[in-house]
Image (cartoon, rainbow, N blue to C red; front, side, top):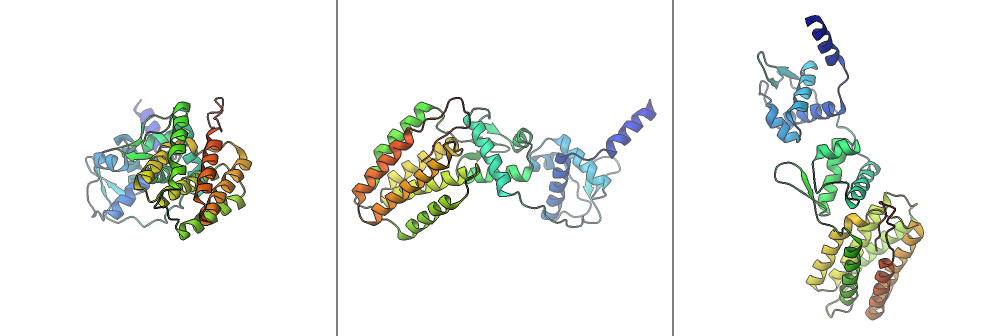
Length: 314
């Protein structure tokens, strides 16, 4: 019996490490280097688990892996310690490709809109659900935090911010925007920044020139959000700008996935450029009328209930 147990243990140790063990091992080595831990420093499992946002069990497995590779030292009685010889610096892994992060970005947005993801998640939850590496998940969470779509919880985990979650809420959002956004173009303090206008024209022309792909839907939404926020900022009315920014935050997850085809992308970009043409010509009333028509047209693009990946944007 003892021999069988010994054989099983030996086979387990010879088994290739899991992806999580490899990632945690690299994370532990990075911590040793970044914290400049001296040889002989005890590597506490609890502290490491908190830093790496996992439980103690996978941390223990990663420490055993590092000990077998002589990158840390096992104690005589228990525990693990920084090795006497510092680990040789390893080449940094390549950064996740934009396509890789954008695909996960879209998958999270779709699942949130379809209510398949809870309000609170951890990096580990997302890694398991989407079979993604920690660097990719961290990169996506950082991007979501930048656009105020998620917020880090005190301690561990992340919390998704509120969104427009049903048809009635989206319809109310468009009616609200129709009340305030065209009015912003005829505010007495309206002033268009030439540098912003030139940048917007460039981004729209670049979008029209690019071959369309699903992952471009994120860039499309962010460009559109910047366009509407820029017009609100040009109004000179701080309250109008705050209102448009809030709407963009609430609409973000419901608009990251584009399902209306490239023809609608062309219409969207050309309508934006036409509004800029009128504003640069000093025809603010005409620009306001075009913006109203633009929003009314976008409001009619109804989501297909049978398609959980459907959305709309302007």
